[in-house]
Amino acid sequence: MSSTLSQGGLSYDVVDPATEQVVTTVPRTDVAGTDTAVARAQRAFETWRQVAPADRGRLLHRFAEAVDASVEELARLEVRNAGHTIGNARWEAGNVRDVLTYYSAAPERLFGRQIPVAGGVDITFHEPLGVVGVIVPWNFPMPIAGWAFAPALAAGNTVVLKPAELTPLTALRLAELALDAGLPEDVLTVLPGKGSVVGQRLVEHPDVRKIVFTGSTEVGKKVMAGCADRVKRVTLELGGKSANVVFADAHLERAAASAPYAVFDNAGQDGCARSRILVQRSAYDRFLELLEPAVKGVRVEDPASESSEMGPLISRTQRDRVAAYVPDDAPVAFRGTTPDGPGFWFPPTVLTPVDPQDRAVTEEIFGPVVAVVPFEDEDDAVRIANQGEYGLSGSIWTRDLGRALRVSRGIEAGNLSVNSNSSVRYSTPFGGFKQSGLGRELGPDALHSFTDEKNVFLAAE
Ligand code: NAD
Image (cartoon, rainbow, N blue to C red; front, side, top):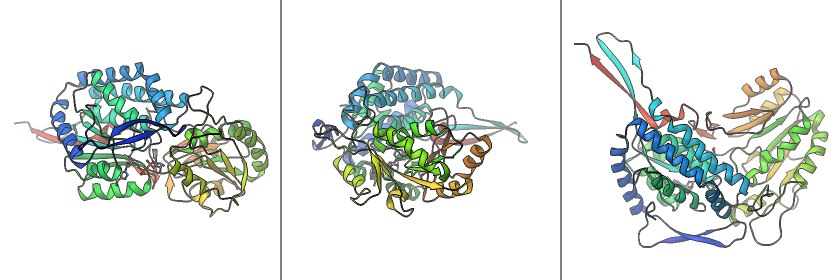
């Protein structure tokens, strides 16, 4: 595959988490292969940055159309590689199309400024950075890659993308679609391989001018330290432990009906998962009564089935990790079911009552486990929601608009929704507070994070 580079014929197996069968084998890029890819991307940058803005936009639009024509194919690939439900996987492929479409209009809107000064004219330019390294986790391989490569390419950069070792297949296909759509060679390169090899080399490489890293806070800190050493620009999208805050005055039926989706979607492997449900004490028992049938009704089944609402976890290691949060004596209030047979399944699980210091309440589990915790009043809700190192997302359920605004302003998180559990829209900014990240993706401003502002003064005489 022209978009990948490995040396010495090294390769590894990619496994279907629903069947535990090998899907295919992909090349494992090494340091030399990474360096070659960066050198090519650097050469490609010299021409890509010169492509007229309208033409660059047109090419990105064609790339979006190629993705659109391949939504079903990409979705089926993701079902097999990541165990995503077919419905979710179609949304994810469609999201890449939409992000590309959105940023395809950007090259012609990368406006500088004219600033009034004495003795001449002062203008600013948003210059592309060069080669951008994009390092992606395994939980949403397509959208997370697209959120970085679409604006990076629109701003005139070239991209070297390292997918997670477990989930390289859709990224490899997207790189092929980019070529089919007419993007020049080496403008978007995909390098499957290990984080400690390819990822680390991208961080260290002097010709990689920016890193967009999505993954764990632990690895994100290392990436940031590596970037600091070289004063390299970095955007970090890291872990989360988001709260779903339900006030007694909320539409409890709606809040309870959507709470399983908010945490069990993608089997809980979502940085925005609302893995703590905080419920006002006076509505606590009623909410649990409503939640129980909703959780037991989650259809955990073959992700390729149209009716599947939750697939398996990504790997045996991840399932063991999640299971460690639910020991035999854990306070399981109720849980859903899983299919028999092979696959890395774990049932949707609700814990309560839970000691506030329990790991299941304080740590990111990244699996289908949620703790339901009571609170007294607004101040208490905000205090509990803000506990811990993360601040990525969250929801607030209330019919009181003033309260919705007060609590939204009080919670330290980058992405909140009121009477909804949605997290991401490609046209609005996305990112974390505290140790959930640094910088923002998506929306109109993300484009500027892939440029450096240059100021030019022209003397009037
Ligand atoms: P991870 O940190 O283990 O790996 C993420 C990526 O970094 C992978 O591609 C990996 O190969 C690479 N990597 C590993 N070591 C590296 C190193 N030393 N240098 C450079 N790259 C390296 O994360 P994961 O287990 O793949 O994903 C789960 C985590 O991602 C969770 O913590 C989750 O919250 C987070 N996440 C955050 C968001 C967000 O938008 N904030 C979205 C999705 C996932």
